[in-house]
Amino acid sequence: MTFDRSIKIAPSILSADFANFGAECEAIEAQGADWVHVDVMDGHFVPNITFGPATCAAIRPHIKGVMDVHLMIAPVDPYIEAFASVGADVITAHVEAGPHIHRTLQAIRGAGAKAGIALNPGTPAEAVSELLELTDLICVMTVNPGFGGQKFIASQVAKVQRLRAMIGDRPIHIEIDGGVDPDTAPLVARAGADVLVAGSAVFRGGSVSDPAPYGQNIRAIREAANGVWT
Ligand code: DX5
Ligand code: ZN
Image 1 (tube, rainbow, N blue to C red):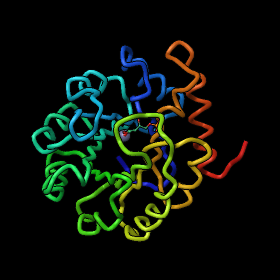
Image 2 (image 1 turned 90 degrees about the vertical axis):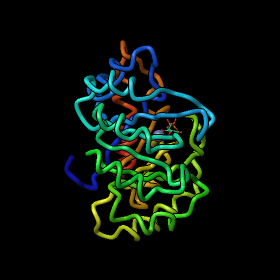
Image 3 (image 1 turned 120 degrees about the vertical axis):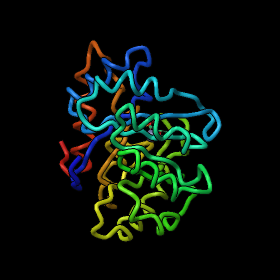
Image 4 (image 1 turned 180 degrees about the vertical axis):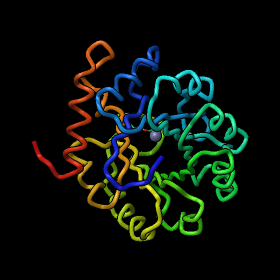
């Protein structure tokens, strides 16, 4: 994975057909996705349950590019090796998931993955200030984690600006997760984000047998983020 700040669109397979993950991953990549965002939920840290390392292992061969695993689980540390060993490129843990996020980030890098740190909407930007040297990506949640299709929380845009200033020229991605669509993408792109996760706004209107809408949706978000209005 090389570092750059160009806009990357990361469809969340939380909005995909759960009976068809392999084909869905191939379809979104063929339609222009840059990364594939994989939402792992435990029914404890967040109120919803999705899937774990076995499902990640099953879909990995269907993803050519970056597999971006977002862990909404607590505890995190006992599972890092399992997600790293199935080929996650980025593993993101929540700062709110336990008392030892510093150790967690060290363990993620130690397992050979890029280390991401996610912030819930109620958590201030300053929560990461002592962690920047251990971090490859900061995920700003623009909804409360647990479900797709929620409304973008606009107050988070100022947090993105603060994080961007804090990062300076360090090679740290800023990822936005929740409620990203062509209307909200420009707000966060302008504030300094470069990875845009989108679930419902990518998968709406399409399917593996009719994937062209995925491509239209991805292009619409990217062009809006880059300031190209079509
Ligand atoms: C929320 C997940 C998100 C979610 C985004 O807990 O982390 O990745 O799938 O879905 P949309 O884009 O529909 O808000
Ligand atoms: Zn996510």
